[in-house]
Image (tube, rainbow over all chains, first blue to last red; front, side, top):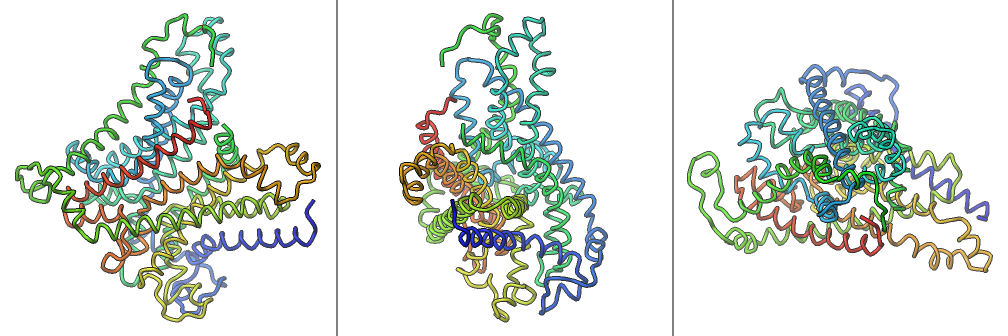
Amino acid sequence: MIRRPWRLAAELTALLTAVVVAFPLYWMALSAFKPAGEVQSTQPRPWTLSPTLDSFRRVFEQQDFGRYFLNSLLVAGTVVLASALIAFLAATAVTRFRFRFRTTLLIMFLIAQMVPIEALTIPMFFLMRDAGLLNTLGSLVLPHLAFSLPFAIWMLRGFVRAVPESLEEQAYLDGASRTRFLWQILFPLVFPGLTAVSVFSFISTWNDFLFAKSFIISATENSTLPMALLVFFDTDTPDWGGVMAASTVMTIPVLVFFVLVQRRLVSGLGGAVKD
Amino acid sequence: MARTTTVKDVRGAGWTPWLYLAPALVVLAGLLVYPIYQLGLISFLEYTQAQVSGGEPTTFRGLDNYAELFADEQFWSVLGATVVFAAACVLCTLAVGCALAVLLTRVRALPRTLLMLASLGAWATPAITGSTVWVFLFDADFGPVNKLLGLTDHSWTYGRYSAFALVLFAVVWCSFPFVMVTMYAGIRAIPAEVLEAAALDGASTWRIWRSVMAPMLRPILVVVTIQSIIWDFKVFTQIYVMTGGGGIAGQNLVLNVYAYQKAFASSQYSLGSAIGVVMLLILLVVTLVYLRVIRRKGEEL
């Protein structure tokens, strides 16, 4: 259909674009492995002949970096588990039952997705202070739980709806209780959808910078990764090797997560769009 | 949709859906609805350091905070910058995303996979590490970009427009993949028979694109456009990290960062909240447009 030279040009463009798009990540990883002298050099080279772990060592030694890493994991993990469970129940309610205010609720969930979480930092700050949660990991878990729920419910809806009604009727005819159907039949069937939803909750929580900055003020032992990264960055002469090593460590879990569910994510989105 | 009586109707669903919804509703009421109410409330109060930690009584100021805000020239310039910056980000993101989606349909598997993987990488990168990496790429002394362009000692974060441009690169880089993947899925979802039929009827490539594909893709395009508007309007991390909290003398402030600075840097919590309310209202309008569009598409809720 398409003539040869055009196709070749298109493929070259695609390859070139791929290189440009991947370049920042390549440069980040490269700079993390470069010796200090090469990173802070006015003659930057796109390769290194003497890779070293010095920057990583500096990052993990100077700060409580491992601790921050665990904190980030703990916060994101808690949000993922809690939001998956709560959203699964809520999505089941709005897809498998007809009841008053159902449509109103759905529209509320949709509007809730659009609320800019950043605009709520101020009242959230006072709420956490009054609840005595400031400086604890709870002050990061709770807001992110609230913010990832509407989207999770909205997205899970499609997966729950895809499970045929007949299956449910059959289960009841076979004498299964509603609870049994929910956890032993519906839950495993919706599980792929739950992983897709979890990616979004994980990423938005893992990437959080604003709350980590605003709510963890004095208890640095409860800080998360972004704050540790900024220690290396926020000076007049940033330690670029350290910044890039810390950035690499922070990016890897998300990348792994993304690659693992990549297929599901892309097809899930396609499905959501075709809806 | 006409529904026949199902087992659960017979059993009397009654309170069951509400039981399932309870945890979600509790969380959302406490951590979303209540803070929104509080945001509105604080924006009507006199609420500064004196009230927060000095124990002074809070007083009701009515619309005075808004009057003060609207009389402030900086607010209008920040609002203008936010709108222009978001518009530029949205346009660039859509242009790049759509162009690459079309490109993806024209190439063989290998280049397609490579471009897909690179884009997923950019998509997955946390906003904060994306910010630090882009600042480093454009660093005046050690960055490869200046080296490549032959600029020595040119600081991108110094000038207002070049700093905004730098942030725009970082924002577009991490947000075009969503548009690309979604549009690509949309194009692939068009049945091949439709395109073949059009080609058999003698339609040119351009004609097929304009009269067959564009109308079919319009709903998806509307969805990604509005999503992009919502995301780009509330960019925080990139601006905050890349321009050091809003640039020299606040030249790179956008509403979000402005509200944050007002509240947490100068303790004017009520003014910060008023800015938050303005943002919330603007995004609510965008959301309502979005709702109208998807309801017109006839999607069953």
